Image (cartoon, rainbow, N blue to C red; front, side, top):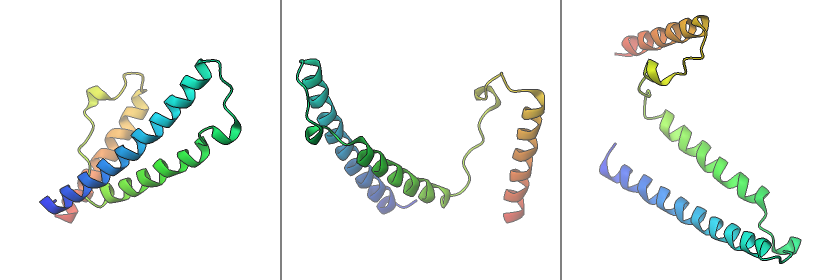
Length: 107
């Protein structure tokens, strides 16, 4: 990625963090009111349904951009839980080999 692309991504993430911080502050203020024994009217409560849709849309957009960057590094076997059966582990190994072959074919 170029420096300009990194800068653009940084600014986008910075804006997203600012929005999320503002949302957290509103939620904390409402929580403090509840903890203080005050009943918060429905009109004054933070609408979690509206808040839930925004980050998901942004995350999906981020995922699409990330997918365009190329393949992700393989997850080391130690990071995969040891609760996997040998059959599941074998399927993962086969899938990884298939993906590596696809990468080799592209080159």
